[in-house]
Image (tube, rainbow, N blue to C red; front, side):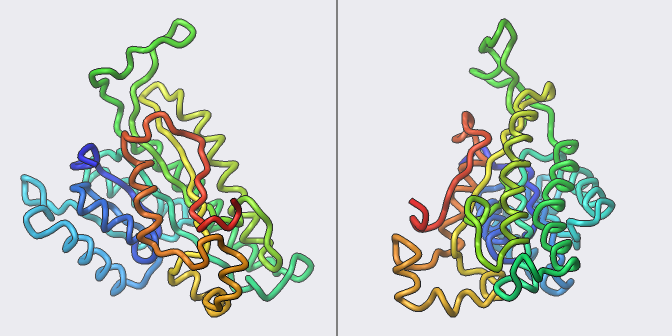
Length: 288
């Protein structure tokens, strides 16, 4: 993925789980990485140190000895905090070329309360982070994207008599298997993740025609992936039972974050230059 080297990528949820694994891989590929997370300061600092280590000492700074990485404490429900993070990212690392929005929460009432009992506070938390947070991040990210530079073979096609715009980059949003199917006792979570798909597809329609350069928008829908969030739901104890895994998942096991990362990297890179508005399942064949 040489085309990601020296490009700036913004990642929410970058201090743990899938977001952190994506940040590590991008650092290895030579990208500049800016992460945002609600994690406590020590955890955020440790995540940043791991990203720097993944890049290697010789590549952790640019030619002017400036760090290629940034970490900020951000609650994605807070518009001012999101906007400040984007401003810091552009000031420190330059305008962005991609974003991966992976901040998410299961809610305190997942697997406990159904639609008839869900509380306002939990609903607002889950939808606020998982859906409204993605909207607020995308809103800030779009304004921070670099303007496209037409390269050989780009921007020369014709559609209805007009030149096809070059691409400025890509956004990858994280939904879930519950973004395409419902789940008992998961009403708030499923609603928020369904919303991410609708929001992303609408954005793909709009941003593919952006005059400053097209931004592709795609979605990944992870299944049961071993992350701190999965552990917090209590699901892990269930799905580790062989009968449960065999029943739910064609491949008869849970997934690892390392099995989600390559797809995200592909969607951020030029290798997927004709892919936008797509929803990609990473669920071990649970819904094939």
